Image 1 (cartoon, rainbow, N blue to C red):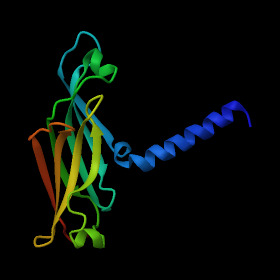
Image 2 (cartoon, rainbow, N blue to C red; image 1 turned 180 degrees about the vertical axis):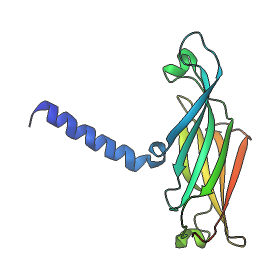
Image 3 (cartoon, rainbow, N blue to C red; image 1 turned 135 degrees about the horizontal axis):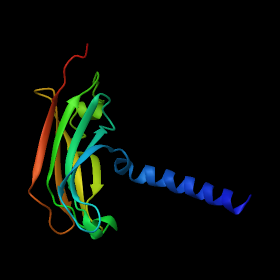
Length: 163
């Protein structure tokens, strides 16, 4: 086997391991962005809109808007993004809830996570289920190992019959 083939094989294994270890880091699809602050060097500060499908509930999609720091530090990945984020989730197809969610055993389950600084800060989306009202609730917030932020946003999906 050539060294190039070995490198491709190792890269394939590395991507598989990363996908298995961090599946929620790879799921977001960037929909668009707007600039919020001009920077002389590097990219402008932005608000980015991303979409992701709930990995456990087919037919549930969330749209997340979040701040992205630009400039030189943002370009090289050492900037810390602010904790500002908003979320809107919608039913986009028929929804059948898995048993662990119906039974409340998956309350507070992380469905999305994105690093927002070089170390220790991330933006997360956590799912809850309200069986009395048959509603999925998605909470987005930012956390850090030592201190998180109280800034948060929620969105709900009332589960309805799909035509």
